[in-house]
Amino acid sequence: MAFTLTPEREREVDDILTRYPERRAALLPVLWLCQRQHGWISPEVVEYVSNRLDVSTAIVKGVVTFYTMFFDHPVGENIVWVCRTLSCDLRGGKAIQEHLESRLGCGAGHTSSDGKFTLLKAECLAACGQAPMIQINDHYYEDLDVDRLDQIIDACAADGSEAAAAKFATFATIGEPMRSSASSAPPPPTEEAVRLASQPPPSREDS
Image (tube, helix red, strand yellow):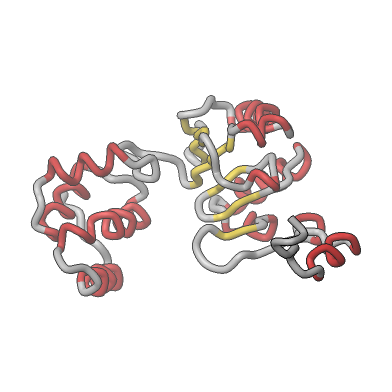
């Protein structure tokens, strides 16, 4: 069966196309829109995007297989990225991954048997100051320990989607930052930091 977007998303595509000098330049946002509806970039989605943007299917497939944010196979309802860069590993990133593998019953690169979670590893999710952390769909969950991680997974599993777990999130990757607790907010500056910041820069003579 041919893939089609909902009428609302078709209007979004029309709007996206007005922002670019040529249709091919809209490939990434249109693919992202399709994946949000379908869950992954199937051959039918590739054909739809190819026709909609007037590019070859080879170009579409090349983009899909290049970027890790696109999936060319079915995935779970919730995509869980575990950050495994050095900063996270020094603060327990490996333990977070191992606990997730135990909870979800699958290793990295695979999907849980109930289809609710796909577990993936990320080289870096750019939240080194709040390690260890994970990303689920569009939200960051930072400063994790096993107990808080279990709360997040329990909320996702009970609701079937990440909506119930978003209250634990510390940052939304799309939209405004959202801090869920004082512990995840940056600490206030110390008196020494304020004093140093208020001093004028040294003159050439001083140096």
